[in-house]
Image: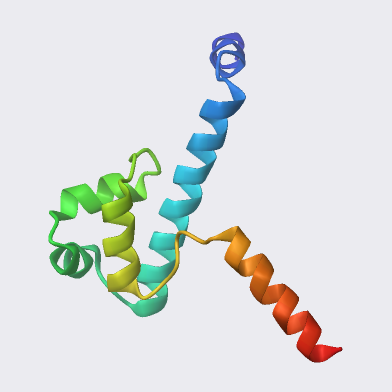
Length: 99
């Protein structure tokens, strides 16, 4: 237990944030595959990758490129990257319409 505590103490907040983000992305991809009934092999084929690479993606340790994230979004028809400024502007517009 002390070893684990020591290792965790060495992780910077920035490293933890990156790890958390990778895990969230992996979880979204995995959940979407289940929701769509898509096998990893079929998904791999659609994104032009090997099934072993998809397994790595789903581990939560993969450092995705923007190109890869864009490919995943297109194949799964989901959004992994959002523009908070755009979302805030849309929220303001919708709020104004409701008033």
